[in-house]
Length: 454
Image (tube, rainbow, N blue to C red; front, side, top):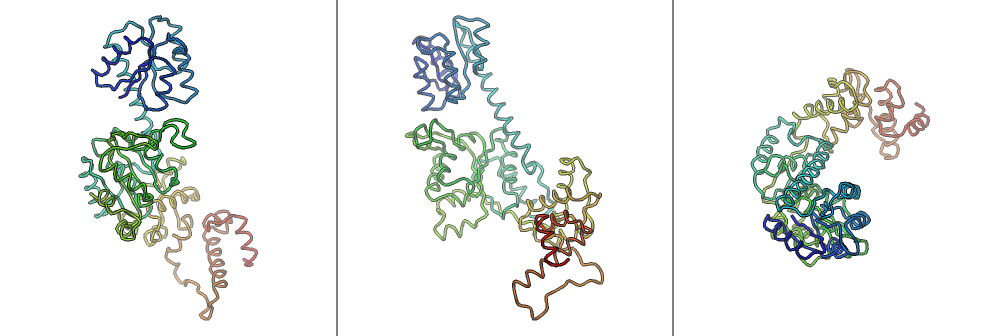
């Protein structure tokens, strides 16, 4: 922990530095508020110990200046002129605590330890907020599939180590869920879990997001920024879509994995970090290496332990287990009763290939929970792309194009017309629900009904 001491008395600065260093803190000192602000803008500190009575800018003005510059470190004020009014005023202006001079060494250390605990709890609360809105509970992976059960055992095995893990699989198969499982099952579970989608951040901003920057590193760098690797210190950083990293950042990530240190954009010194790396990709990184788009040395660094997630179409036994879970989840969210699935809906859902995997299944169930008024989710309430796999009623045959028809335009019109007719039949001619099933607007459906003469 880094502490900045701000006091105009050299003896006080020296005494506090000795006390703090003896307790394992990294202490720096500034003789006045202006020098302290300059140091805060060029370096990161966890806590600030600041005197109130100082020449030039006093401690209260210093608190105002921190607020204006959006410097958010925890500040503990000190003064030999103690009064309740002064203490209250310090708190109003953003100070965490107030210590009266003279003080004992134990008193200042105790106050810092309290501040540390408060910061730890704040970060834990933030982490729990993230977990509370996560798609799935990482501690409860729903599966009875033999392959996925083996993956869970592997997750438990590797969780206790700092070894880098590469999770691969199609979009929606649960790569982040597995990464969270690795984090939550290991000794880092109480530390931060930081997830970043490398493909969702513009390349020009990605280096700053991952490693941070110092003030003045580029035009809009008005103050220091802590990168995601630093935020994950002591915990886990999940690099989703790592195959999207630009080549120049692949080099820097390789250095982080080799040296366990980062260098902020525009900085001249490195910072040691302790963050376990779990990476994920939908790409075949071996092919990317062969094509020259991904560094082979980085691939081997990331691929120490590889976990390949099977697509949902290869886990047919899990489809209805997951569907029941999502039905209960959205019943609670929407204030409804959990619904079971009809025989036709069940057969369609098992037969469907689910190209969007578990994410697509959840979306389908959420949609059905909104549309379905009965206690059973029928084929009419699941997306038409899925419902199309429901068994045909006895005595009916699927319609087809005339054998001689080869016009794509006419074929598209025929298919549209048949899908609209089917959607209207499935919804008892409820055009609003039919439009939802067809995934088109109500207005577009009315136009097509008129155009096709339905």
